[in-house]
Amino acid sequence: MSTAPVVNEKDLNRRVKKARQQVSQNEDLIFEKSSPGKAAWKLAPLDVPEVDSAALLGSIERTDLGNMPEVSEIEIIRHFTRLSTWNYAIDLGMYPLGSCTMKYNARVNEAVARLDGMANAHPYQPEAISQGALRVMKTLSDCLIEITGMDSITLQPAAGAHGEFTGLLLVRAYLEAQGNPRKRVLIPDSAHGTNPATAATIGYEVQQVASNSSGMLDPAAIAAAMNEDVAAIMVTNPNTIGVFESDIAKIAEIMHAKGGLLYMDGANMNALVGKARPGDFGVDVMHLNLHKTFSTPHGGGGPGSGPVACKKILEPFLPTPVVVEHPDGSLHLNYDRPQSIGRVRAYYGNFGMFVRALAYILANGPDGLRQTTEDAVLNANYIRKGLDGYYDLHYTGQSMHEVVFSDKKQAKRGVKTMDIAKRLIDYGFHPFTTAFPLIVPGALMIEPTESESREELDLFIDAMRAIAAEVDESPEVVTDAPHNTRVSRMDETAAARKPILRWKPGQK
Ligand SMILES: *Cc1c(COP(=O)(O)O)cnc(C)c1O
Image 1 (tube, protein in one colour):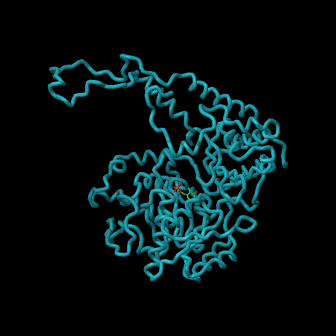
Image 2: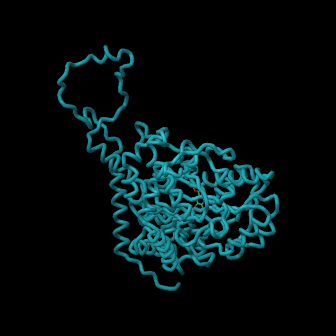
Image 3: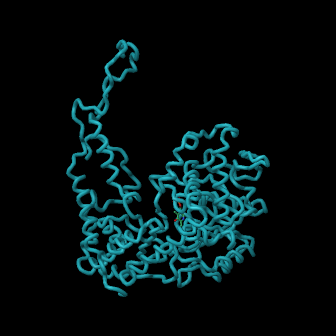
């Protein structure tokens, strides 16, 4: 242990107490609020002749309104506002989910996306009155091409996984045009699960390549696996243990020498923007997650957006339409691309997200984006230092934007990564990513992003240190957590497979 635990008791107590208070408030309130005669609306007195609605509507008039709740305006406002607090959100506190880049969604993005011309643009509007919307797409495309060092881009895919799917379709179309689509895709054992799933969906066999003892790609292993049946390798860089693959240019050479391509999973671009460009280190095609790196909302707050950037050789195969600029400066949608893989999404992609991502890029500018990257890496290393000695670091390579610990110390006391994550909820934080990447047994994957202040990082470190102390003193406090939430440990599989998304009368 490098330093003694410096738990900021006052802050910790305040935070836990606040969380407790919130939850008990929620528990005490009865969900069902209806009582006869209440209404959340009031109309002015009628100043026109009354109409006989039965005569007007006939048999379609609904007379039985069923079990509709009758509530006042303030009751309904409080009901929904309270419900919204039963979920954790980035607007409530830190969200240290590694690999997910859960950063603050800047409000200026929302203001811009809500401008009439943006929010009310229709995808079937003629080009002549869509120049502003097309300019947003063109400028965003140009910015992302510059940031990635690639030649061309499609904004159509709606998520990272959808981008992978589109990117590999480009690879297959390119190889097919040369006469042989090939059979296999190489995937490192540290990869995100979407990578092998994508390759299999496209119809490629997946061949796993082992990482070396430092958790890094091994050029010799890749050279041994590479032959003329291999279409591509999918590489995440920095990899999923948050370490930069410094042999990436060599790996590109190995792939290119036998006619294969290098796909980069760009979900970790938050560590590279303004610092290094995948196009410069040999990447042929990659996706970006606007809902990670470029600050557009994530998950339930989405929708997502997963643009795919590529080198010139893949450009003819990009999905249609493509935005093109004529010499007079006007913008047009080009559908006349005979080698295109076709559409991967209705219309042009999630336009509202393009607006938000562009607002983020322009608000920050080149220096701001570079600063963002530096702060994200600094924050991750601050946490790494703060938890050094409290949690085991399985791989010790230089951390970029995230740090991956393991539960090795705690497992000796019967406490697993999932238990620690659940206990963290009691301290007022969203859990970190658990049990991924698979090459780290019992992984705790932590990514603070640049959004967090030093005060918030200190609070997080205190909470994690406090949990480590609890594991030593009374592990059951951790294995039984969370204690302060409305529901404790749920059947997460059933919740995903058989979700109950609608409240029914009589249900609490
Ligand atoms: C998030 C992520 C993906 C998938 O992105 P989605 O938008 O969730 O489909 C792929 N790879 C990595 C490394 C990721 O972190």
